[in-house]
Length: 254
Ligand code: COA
Image (cartoon, rainbow, N blue to C red; front, side):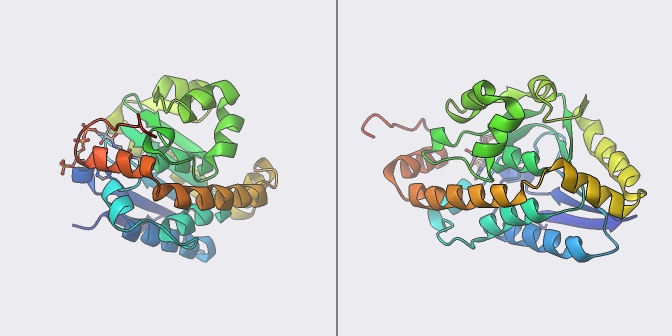
């Protein structure tokens, strides 16, 4: 079974996370494939919209923690960073359907999506501090912008999760539906987008993003440099080993 299901129909490219036994955590191979898909879709006239979706019980639990231990992204062009930069540079509409947990990049990728629909079981979390690392995917810039500083601080400093209603309230998601309906809703909305004139979609998205792409790219690079360094430090190593051993991390000496 492949970890990503890729489908194009009626000008909508759908990327379905399909690693449910590992809560749809992302491996390096998945990032590389998603980066390739976005880069190809950017110039493919047969694609006007991209949809990310998961399973009714889980969107994504973020980066594969075992991968962080065995094959950390040490170079600036590691697949995870290529995926983030591809997200930022993607000029066609991005739609996401989120049900269940959305952890780490499972949440931060949503800041780059134009339409996000949530199941009423969606739970968003950016627990980077609890993992001994720092924000990624420009979430240190985009979370305060989208959520306001206070709520971003609770999410990023405390690593506290927030639920679908809070995400709706802060404008991160556009609508909440039952978990089994969220993928279908995202598909319907994507199909609507796909019938609209592409030049108008591109112009409108570009105007709404207010020329932020360079700023976002720069922040992603700054975060990635810190993140790569912190991955090898004792706090992150303790956090990842604790997760794999299903115990609480002990930061008392750090
Ligand atoms: N990386 C690797 N494996 C993961 C994973 C991740 N990010 N998230 C879950 N898994 C694995 C678990 O190790 C477990 O594997 P096992 O069956 O071989 O023991 C399996 O997926 C089920 O996960 P589990 O934690 O038992 O499910 P749960 O329903 O109790 O909790 C989550 C689900 C998503 C809330 C929880 O797994 C979680 O918080 N994961 C997030 C990990 C994380 O910190 N990600 C951010 C990285 S930046």
